[in-house]
Image 1 (cartoon, rainbow, N blue to C red):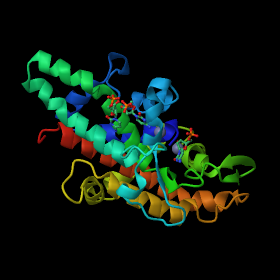
Image 2 (cartoon, helix red, strand yellow):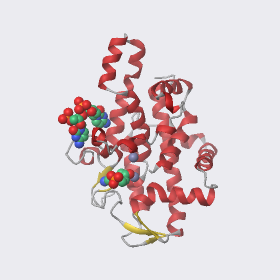
Image 3 (spheres, helix red, strand yellow):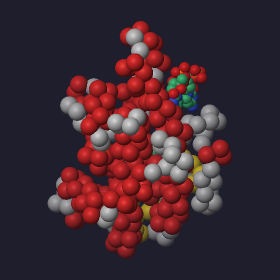
Image 4 (cartoon, rainbow, N blue to C red):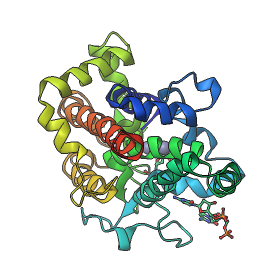
Length: 278
Ligand code: DCM
Ligand code: DCM
Ligand code: DCM
Ligand code: ZN
Ligand code: ZN
């Protein structure tokens, strides 16, 4: 997602955090975040071009085999150098696992805590996790390999040129915001939030759960992602095509439900890591 998609995901998650979760999140956020997770949800995009963080660029997405419309962790999750686990689903597992060390802080003497923190930076782990749970819900972040998740598919978005990936990262959200939500992301987020709460505790509950009781289940999110990419993102979006109202109106519900799922699942993961039952 672009900045709005990430802000939306984290803004949707925030009110779903338990008090104990908030306490842990607050303690991990830097002072200048002022207790707002959403304010730092785009951080991994801001730093991925830096040499020190270059290795994190592939953690934002997963490339799957062309036209297969299926995802498989062992087959698909590695970076351009073949490092296993260096993709969005591997990163969610890794950062989740790093964050399970958070409670060791409370039960260990300061020197042990210091030693753990030089190995893992839990602040960065929280920011990467919050960002990548958003990205993995963008259907084209689990796209085909040869077109880099739609980045090389040039289309017309109404009268302007755009690549298909950017349409899904940014353009659909931007147009919806302008057309329906007074150009306000907060208004859009509130509408999505109402839809989640009205449409039943059950829907959010279902999204929250992982099949084998894991803290996070990125393979589930990725499998949904490539399926939606094939059914909605790539469909009727061949190179040179014009995407306008028909495409926008039929795909916006997918975008909104993926933002909702990302927010609900981010909150569920953080509650399992830090909440009263953790
Ligand atoms: N790393 C890497 N190459 C990637 C992705 C990540 O080297 N494509 C990581 C692994 C190490 C660090 O960068 O954390 C430096 O690599 P190493 O210490 O394995 O030489
Ligand atoms: N690493 C990680 N979690 C990921 C992906 C990569 O911990 N999801 C990396 C970060 C560390 C590296 O593993 O840089 C450990 O290698 P290094 O000794 O080079 O830091
Ligand atoms: N991206 C992707 N799949 C790829 C390569 C990139 O989903 N194989 C995403 C990451 C960014 C966007 O596309 O959100 C643009 O990538 P970049 O800035 O690396 O060109
Ligand atoms: Zn993207
Ligand atoms: Zn990203």
